[in-house]
Length: 298
View (cartoon, rainbow, N blue to C red):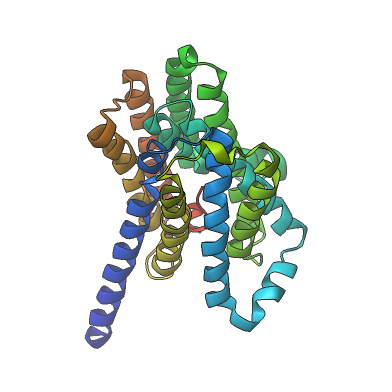
């Protein structure tokens, strides 16, 4: 027993470090987007292009000779994941063009609770008392943030909500079709984003440093983040993955505050704090469940 304790602790440390690095990578999305000059749709397509390349390389490294089979074996559930991930990913970057980084990230953090509600409505998935409490908390937090964003226009409210709802659908599908690998679907979703956005891309709007930023967002923020997540999620319990991943919500607004003096509104901070509390309530209450944060990221 004692002999195995050392390796177990080492694996746990490595797992926590991997999730920590994943959260740091994800948190750079807003910082990168704020440095772009390209049009919003061009930003979405550019990040998706580089993300598709990085994710395909990751799938290739994981599946090797089974790569083609992994994509062909996604089935209807995998295709549904692909579509909802594409919507969520595109809406995420578009939302950053309309509202604060903090507002987008706090809203995204509510996706697991929204997934619980959708699972209950669509497929009669049981919801326990603790999860209902988390749902009520998250709903209150989202309402506070949405009310504080109304003055910024419909995009500041609608896009973050669309992002969160579509990502929640991904979580619902992933929970009930665990035989479907998320990695090929995530890669395919970025290809779909490129295809849909391609007719509306304005290459002339791309600034001198935009290509480097877009590559960093696609390869680093998405690709590297998912790589670290894939490693860490295998080494530590799902609840720890969920809690450590919340670091993204803290760091994302911090980076843009330090670099661009972007200060979240009082409503965003208040609503975000409520949403984070809801995530903690749900995560600590279901230590044996599959971590939704281990499935994908936008």
